[in-house]
Image 1 (cartoon, helix red, strand yellow):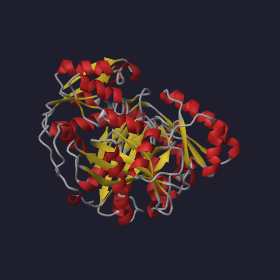
Image 2 (cartoon, one colour; image 1 turned 90 degrees about the vertical axis):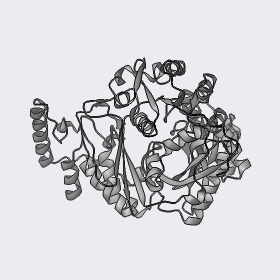
Image 3 (cartoon, one colour; image 1 turned 180 degrees about the horizontal axis):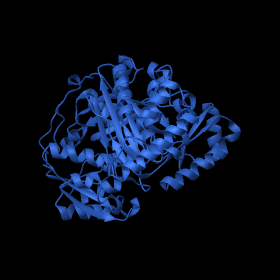
Image 4 (cartoon, helix red, strand yellow; image 1 turned 60 degrees about the vertical axis):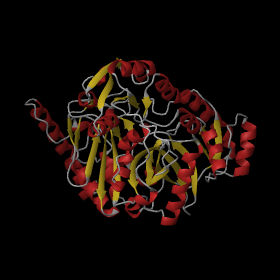
Length: 512
């Protein structure tokens, strides 16, 4: 790769400003490349896996994130006290906070992520759209700037043509977003979007773009160094979502042709270069049924779903982040990269898929993760721990690899069948249903998969046989719990607290 005179700076100790599975994942790579690690924790996370894995750990404060994981000054003070020379923010919390990146630099700490200006540029959706326009990256028709006047906005929506999407200029995750099909609903929807955006992000600005019918959500992983080298590591398909948030991802996408893949990858590289981006990031697109693609946003951090890219490329993205943060050039050319096989990720959340995916935090009485060839589990909580109400309810990310997409799906079905969780309801049964659904297996699905293909009633059979078996299971659990044994059944089975393999198999074979 192209290299300018050396600006390398050696990292020796990394503070991981996060918790859960991403903190564990970053700590492991740091250990593999010979770096000391520092964990930070809130009071209920005192015995969490990331705390025990790190070389050192420091308390930040009580449970609320605002009093712990979002306390910039406290985190930087811990970095100084511990002698850390770099901070990895993971994802969420402070990972896309330009002020935090600036504060790290001011304190003489290396921020393992993009420069503050790039975070600001891509964090403001309207500024990002202007950059994309200048870089020639395709965008859905809409406003480049935020718009406040409801009458003018309604006129623009009429020109674009319904349906339209009203989106928050700051933030993401589906907050401050409204789909409008009827002109008569536009102003009310705009008021709602602005109010929600103000509440979620402290910024009520919104913009308007054409809503893409039956879209696919496809994103490209990019890496960029300080020496002018920017590459992409192919795409991930992230179309299976609930509440506009991803739950199943795969790499590569089952619909992209080599030609469209090449075009989108080049557009992603241009998008990153347009804001002087360095380190790892993700450029997200919406793709319509004719494989036209439109820039949606750029995530200026490591993504939750990065393991599927690691499976198919063989590249440790956290190790590359560290390499770039040290000022070293990428050690790979675009021509060196290729995809091998297919990978799928299922996010295992403590949520109830039969009840609109509402969170179900609580103690994790049983957590027996699957294993075997081609199976990876990134977990942030373990048996005997607790899925806390204060944070994202993710238990783990389950990923599988296969030589073909079909093999990866079949391996995922086996892994989901093996996975035992007791104490909380999880998304495991939903993922199992999705893996077996013809729409998923055929690759013919969109971001509306949950609404169009998922019937929650299949997860809540109501016959006498099930009630009898569930009662016996609950009795067995209580009996074995007294002897400190953890059975592979669901605790509180009578009230649907969890789904164990026997129940999933029964549904699969009986159609209940």
